[in-house]
Length: 223
Image 1 (cartoon, rainbow, N blue to C red):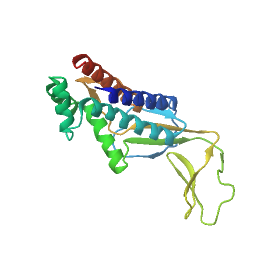
Image 2: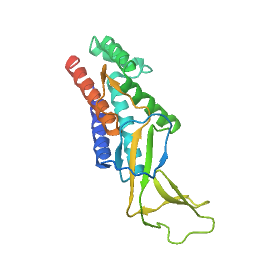
Image 3: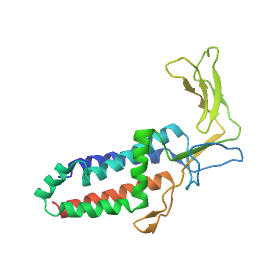
């Protein structure tokens, strides 16, 4: 009955492993190049690859939301809800309670809102900061055409080469540059208790734990 949810839960765990592999202790300098949404940021983690980190975080949020959909079924699929109720009486009432719980939980609201913002608008709650000391870069493009412009933002230096299939050509940073990442306006409460940390990895891991418990409860009640 919940085979799809189990598959998506494995996807969540794979995404979290990928996210954790990109984390390193945060190191900051007095020179900072920052980008991302405005607002108060949560706890920092460090990374060497901001682009890969952003992708892994986005995948975590999307996959964990999919687990919830697979267990509880979206309200648009009323036929599937009725089918589960017929096979396992009590499912509709339990589902209503869990949907209400998620709507009142700051962490679950964050997951839902960020998944929708990412999917429909390409928005991300992450803010990145590049902390340069002294660093040497080597060009990934051997011959640069006329009009190429070197730019630097919070994810590192890169060339902009207009009128090419891939306008952005990143440099490889060799030494002396580190990155930090945090969530802007992260959730601070979950299940009526303060979260112990608000960095991106902890937020994803806590959301995964909630959905693991949700699936276990569903299986116990509706075998």
